[in-house]
Structure formats: structure tokens, C-alpha cells
Image (cartoon, rainbow, N blue to C red; front, side):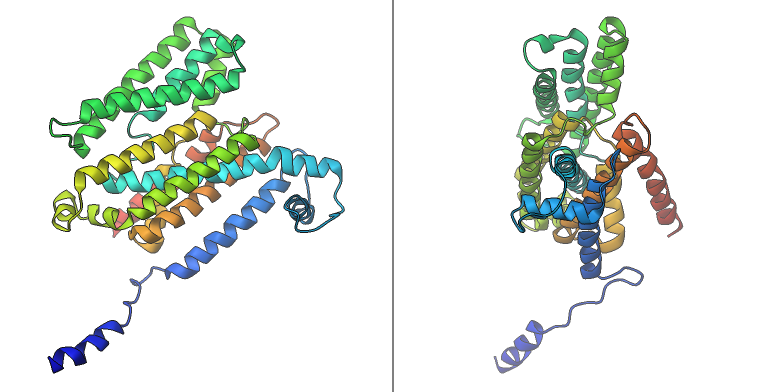
Length: 362
């Protein structure tokens, strides 16, 4: 008894282990990403066909947030920064955060390093809905942008329901391997339907619009839709952080997670449904955007490790930064806007190849 009483205080004050050699501590990485995110947003708000100095950008934001009175900026600068660019930049940050977090979660749940937010077929299902609106021209019933959002979200939900129905076992379980196969099958089917509508029924304008949407665009983001993406990002981050320890347990496999007291089936259903719905929400507003959810979690794991309480928020910040700069490049490099999916692919592919080569050497 005396020995136990003497040992316990020492256990409470046990020093924290040092980070692995070659890996920076978490705090500087987190601070650096937070500062870089803030700077990126301010700079991106000033870049475009009309350049706005960063000092005027800060003045517009401060005046709009009622931090100062009479900022001394012109009405044109205020309109460009706050009404046109701010919802787009903030929306890009939210979408990037959602995709990166969803990718990190699905990679841990399935044990598949190539898993991304569209693993459960939501991207392909959303494409069917959006292309249907574009090809068959049902925009006379309502504004086409609203119809595309509604149709793409409905298509994503329908594809998700089919995948879960195919993957679900008799006991209600959701095996990772069967879920991946079901997602691939439904994705192929939806891709075939999309191609059929474009080739058989689509005209040149519809085909071009469908291709641009399937490569992603932030052009339709305005304050109402950006507010929804902000709520979506906050919700998915709260959900996944609440399951951070569960995801840590999944990193060692299903059997290890079950032995640690994790309700494997319930956790997988909750997290897969939550991330799939979040991904479906982003697709409805901006279209499918590749490589963010695939590459960003790998980069952050390389920097700070695989503990999800750290990995998830830092992945959100890194995904937000990547998509802000990708969208800025997409709308400012040429006179006509480039689909953002092309930019993320150009940036993400070399980074992923570098990480794979580095891991192979290690």
C-alpha cells in the first residue's frame, strides 16, 4: 500500500515522449497552418481581374464586421471583396476542410490508403443528377443552379443508399471490403449513365457545361450557399473529433478496435454516413473535386502522425489552404476560368507521387 502511494504521484507527472526523429512538434505545425490559412484568405480576396491591396481587403472586412467605422475604401472595392470574392474564398476553405477530413476518416475506417470522400459513390450519383438537369434542360421550372444543386444532392443520396444496401450484411454489419466494392460498382454504373446522357441526348453546350461541372467550380458560391458549407464543415469536424479515439482504434484493425471496447459496426455506420452526407453536400454546391481528400491526409500524417485528435483539425486547415489557392489559380491564371479539379490534380499528383516514393525508400 505504501509503495503504491509513492508510485502513483510519479506516474501522474510522467514526462511526455519526444516526437519521432525528423518529425516537427505538433504546436508549430498547427500554428503555422493557422497563420498560413489566415494570410491565404486575405491575399486571395485581393487577387483577380481587379487587384485590391491587402490593406484595403483588411479594411473592408473590418468595416463589414463592425470592428471599425469609415474604413476609407471605395464602394467598388467593398463590393468586389465582400459580395463577390469573400463567399467564394470562405466557401472554398469550407469545402477543402470537409473533403480533407472525410478523406482522413474513410482511409482509417477502411484501412485503404487510396480511399477518398467519394468512396461510397456520392460523386458519381451527384453527376447523374446534375447532368440530367443540364442535358434535358428542365431549368424552365426553376433557376437551373438551384435545380442542379437539388438534383445532384438527390443523386448522391440515391447512390449512397444503393451502396449501403448492397454492402449491408444480414446482421446489419458494414464490412469495409464489401462497401468499397459496392461503391466501385455503383460508381461505374452512374458513370455509364452520365456518359450515355451526354453522348446520346446532349448537345455541345450541355456537354461542355457537364464536363465543367464534373471537374468542379466555385463560381456559384454566394453567401447563402457559403453559409451552408460553413455549417457543414463545423458539423463534420465536430462529429469526427468526437470519434477521434474510435478512429485511433480502427488504425490497428477491426479486431483490435473491438477488443478495446469499440462498437465497430455502429461507429462505422455513423462515420460513413456522416462523411458521405457531408461529401454529398459539397458536391451539390461545387461539383466533385478530386485529390484534396486523397492527398491532404497523407501529407498531414507525414508531418504530425496518425493521432486523429491532431490529424483531423490540421487536415481541415491544410485542405482549406489547398482549395483556396487552387480556386485562386483557377479564376486568375487565364482570362476564362479553369475548372478547379484540373488545378488540384496538377498540384496533388506530384505530391502524392513524392510521398509514395519517399515511403518506398523508407
